[in-house]
Amino acid sequence: MSEERFRGGSRRAFTLLEVLIVIGIISVLMAILLPAAERVRHQAYIDKCASNLRQICLAFQTYAQDNHGNYPRTPYSGNPATYVLNEGTGTNAVDPFQSGPGAVQVNDLTAPLFLLMKMQKLSPEVMICPYNDETDFKADNSNFTGRSNFTDEKKNLGYSFANPYPLDAVAAAGYRLSNKLSAEFAVAADRNPGVSGKNDDVYAPTLGSPWSKMKLANSPNHEFDGQNVLYGDGHVAWQKTAFCGVAQDNIYTAKKGLAPKVEASPSDATDSILLPTDD
Image (cartoon, rainbow, N blue to C red; front, side, top):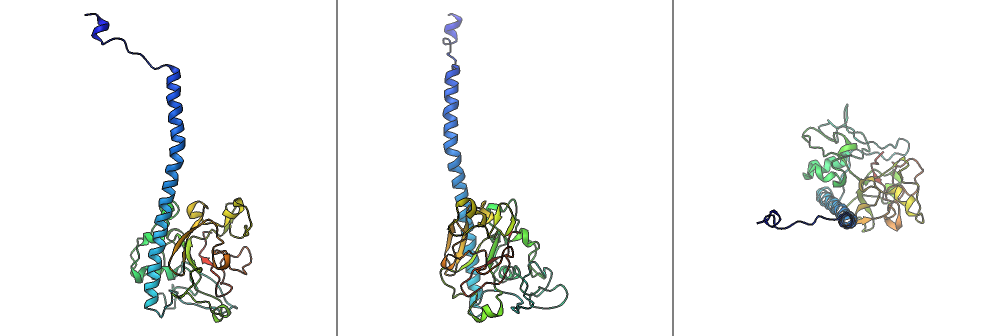
């Protein structure tokens, strides 16, 4: 038996052209599949984020049932002469409603959400948008006992909520965060981008702005592509722009707010201004 027959005959190698064709086909398939996979991944983040907001909504509603329909807030002052908003105060305070050294300060934007976690046993992970849970944000898994605020609200809170501290005149005009809000009123959403750089400026767009400017007012949670928004009737919707409040109000600014001061009182009873900001 010849050596050639013993080996089963000679084997034909791929030509350079065939190799290039195969590589080309693989490249085309990758170009098709990778963007599709990225879209699926991003949609999964959007869906999980929406689930977080629905859980937060249930906690709001349960809290309201035990508190005359009101959503949570901690010490409050709407006096225009001394009006100020705080965040992250009183971390080690035993009771968020007690005064004294180390206490939660008036109009603290983050303490009500920590109170919600404490009272309704919400998981700290629910307060983090899943798109950023391994980068910009980290769940606050510290012991809640003897505490009244997040360890680091810049890292532990990935969402913004309707300001529960209106000026006295706005409160008198009917502004109240409760379980009676309209289906158009934005209660919470991915975190307010604020005004901190070239990629984010909530005051940059108007309703008629092109997408290049419109996205500057979107939340950074989803790379400025849009935001999940929780509304007064409990439904959550993915919104491509921040102009999605009552009568297409920008949910991240006060109707009569002056740039660049984003953190302010709502202007009237239908004004959603979701805080704190990402600044």
